[in-house]
Length: 159
Image (cartoon, rainbow, N blue to C red):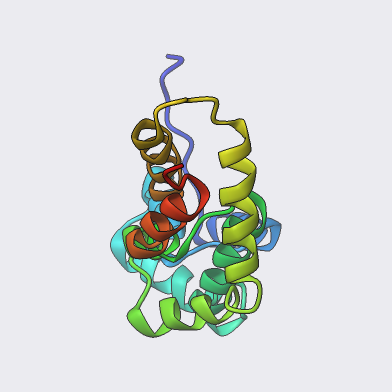
């Protein structure tokens, strides 16, 4: 029978989760999903989660800060998208607020650079369509709508 499911002892599962969390920052939701995938029972999941938190393998605030920093620096995501993604991972409001502190310093500069860079690639002659393209791109990246529309008007003024 080739469809046998691998079973894990509590110690094996714990060791696996320690490696899983040590490799990169994880949120509680990811760890629970992984343990469920390993077919662990809820009592064991709670036990392993507690161990990971106590031994600092799992730290939701550290995860949120790292996530926000990474998505902001490398993918140029704005507050809206980062917040939405953290909420999808069941991160608390407090930890989301902490994560937002991580991107505060360069926020305006990154937005301006990103908007200018995208505007330079838009060859649309119709001003309204050009603004729309820029706005759609920046909104998709998760930047605040008021900021986006103001920048679209600034970069594509009427002649």
